[in-house]
Image (cartoon, rainbow, N blue to C red; front, side):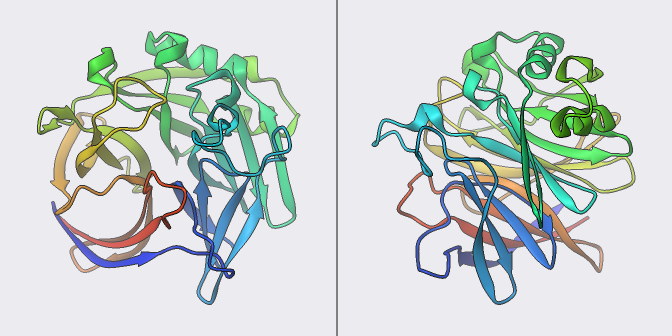
Length: 293
């Protein structure tokens, strides 16, 4: 695969405030929903505007969260976003008890559900302790949601994925079913390589519709699933049922946290990616990528 960065732009709301900690991107209405992992609102990015869309109620009276303010432990930490019907399903990382929620966002509002029993089941399927769970990407493949665990080789955690019954998951979020009744299976593990001795770890995933999955990965030097660290490299990896088929490194060490397909192009795809600056005062970036086979 050959990867090029065609455009880079800063994401800001209409009032000039930054889109913070972009962690996922998915099609939404006539634009794209960009998730902020440390805020109660996402950014609806349309051709002529960027507006806030509430995805979760205020937490303890707070709308944004940070380590400096002593509120990082309260953040929803939505790290995955998948189009479901006319809405977008947001999924927390599961890296703390407060991050085991989902939100189904539509043009008319949102529905939030505590999915702790499901997160416990996923962690058990992956053979992880509660403090090792860090689910950072997901994509829809037929009637399943493939949910990706972000690696941390320092902590002995590999890149991995499980398949979840999508219909039962949506029922659990909307209240039509129970979180402990969602089927989980088909564990897969992936070795994506390293950059400067730091493992490339899955940060998001998108289905290509033919059984293949494209994942973004960042080599972030951090000892655990909660703290940020320096990013020394990034890449895209193509996966199929046989494992990792190809990889392409970014020319710079972007901390890409969200990935979506914008359109097919000759010999490949045009993608959108969002980059988390790990600084609440710095706008997240949107990248337009060209990927050719």
